[in-house]
Image (cartoon, rainbow, N blue to C red; front, side, top):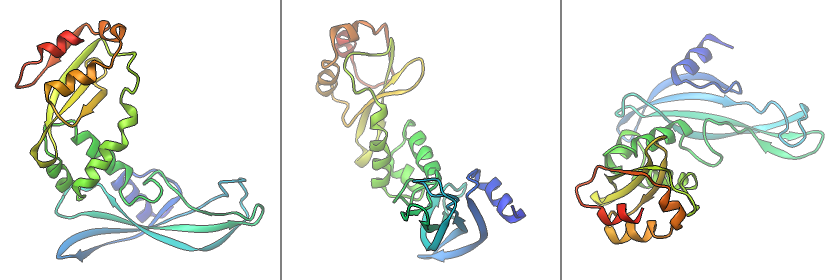
Amino acid sequence: MSSLNHCIKFELDIKDENIVFKDYFYKSIKLQKHKIYEAELIQPACPYCGSLALLHNGHLITNIRYLTANASHPATIRLAKQRVRCRDCSRWSMAQSELASKYCSISNASKLKILSALTEDRSMTSIASENNVSVNTVQRVLGSCSHRFLDSYEYLPAHLAFDEFKGVDRQLHFICLDGDSHQVVQILRTRYKKNLLKYFGRFSPQARANVKTVTMDLNFYYQDIVRAC
């Protein structure tokens, strides 16, 4: 591993051994100074049969937005993904990495930073500006983690925490957390009492009986919701 590749990986905290950085430079894009990192993503073996007998057939260039400490200088990894054909099973494939999801130009590290910022009392507009993405991207990141929320209406944590946060168009949304693990239970688009009662009313009586305490940091009264739980 070259010293340049090692230093860039250390700076960006990238551990994928199949990514090899070759160069870095500044480039002006739409009158804004961007940091560009050029790298190649190697396909070491066939993902279908594991064969090392590969026939290389060029690269697919993908510009991946990455984390940056200075929002005024966006960072982009210009990643050249190897395209290969296996000589044994004759199947085509393209190199993939945990750096970013397939067909996505936003790094997974950036998505985690956006998701972490969504737990704070901030608007989606400010989060998007800080991470050099659009508000729609922030919304998609929030929607992509919906499978982690509680989909079953047969269980509620013993300790719940309610709060509100400012989202799109300065609208206030409702968030419910597990008071012990701080994991997100659910995020609702509105904070109105009727919507919250409708949501918590879907849970079984046994699930609501499991709730021992409810912590609220809101500007309005949730006595009916607490009673429902």
